Image (cartoon, rainbow, N blue to C red; front, side):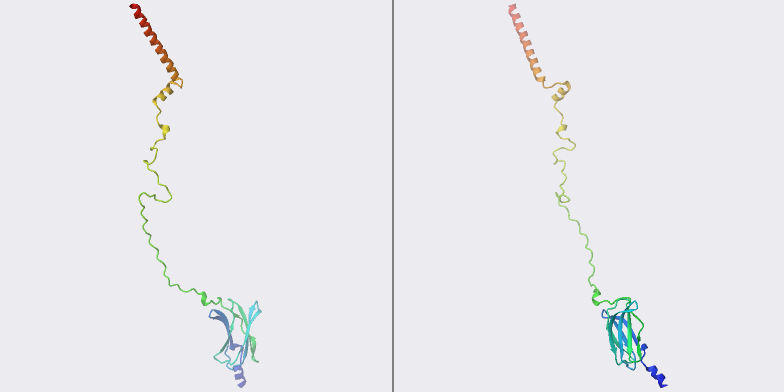
Amino acid sequence: MFGVAGNAMACTIKDFSAVAECDGGKGVIRVTDVDPLGVPAEVTVYLENNGADLRKVGTQVIEGSTAEGVTVTFDENWKPKAEYRIHIAADKYVDEDLPILVAPDKSCKKADDTPPASDDKPEKPEKPGKPAEEEPGKPAEEGKAPTPSPSESGTPAGSGGTNNLPSPEGDSNLAETGADSDTGPIAGVAAVLVALGVSAVFYSMRRRGSSMR
């Protein structure tokens, strides 16, 4: 009976457990020993990569364990789903590994990463104001000259300028008769001939009168 009881009270690998969790925004690995006999146990943690030890995280010794449990903590900024091998060596009772520890799916977030809640209320959109009334005599838009009114324009509406003014009557008569710039001299010669004719008639009548006397 004593041997059976002694084996029941002996330290075993089942007295140890491990977990990867967050502590104040940083990652840690905790190993707990619930051996009621308080057998000193050496705990070594390794980071695994494809079944091989990639890096040694650290080693700590658990002493004075009780049935309530004693825990040691390893600071480890683990990545999501990272794997760790944890070896336990407790005197002549235990010298083996715990089942592979797999880190959580999400990494630890620092307290500073959480944005503070905003107390500011969204600003209300301003009501559109009435458009400013345009002052009389000013154009509707700056930079554009106002269109001149018919009274301000030098040429009356519908007029094509001085080219459409009617020509003098004399010009039209000359154009119709085919007269040119020689009309003036010809008219002067005609006037001289008429004057000579009148003088001849007057002279002839005078001579006739003298003969009758």
